[in-house]
Length: 84
Image 1 (cartoon, one colour):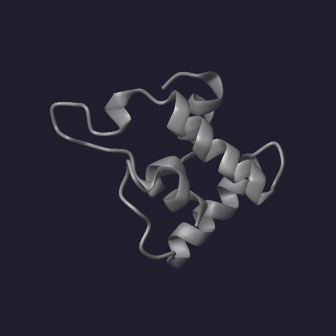
Image 2 (cartoon, rainbow, N blue to C red):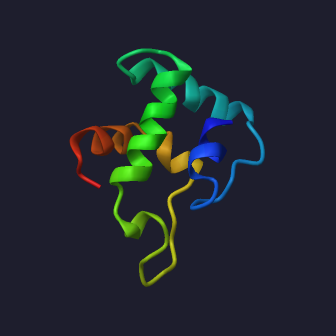
Image 3 (cartoon, rainbow, N blue to C red):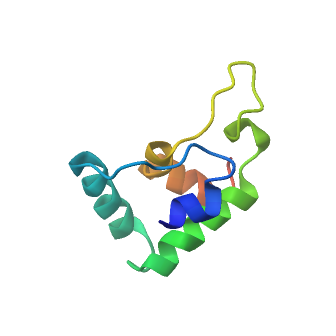
């Protein structure tokens, strides 16, 4: 899975794809410039390279972004706009 390959060493790995996640993936893919696995990989890579350390646990609560967080439309928009 692209998420685990790209971000699995920094964020919690995806263990299963349930129906809710499958629906979220379809929605995310529809929002990408191209609905391809390469575009999904590029999104995860861009997030990995541009997100500040807060998203990887460098905060007072120890919170880290998750797969579900990256599936959110607003996270995609923030990544595109460099607002992470």
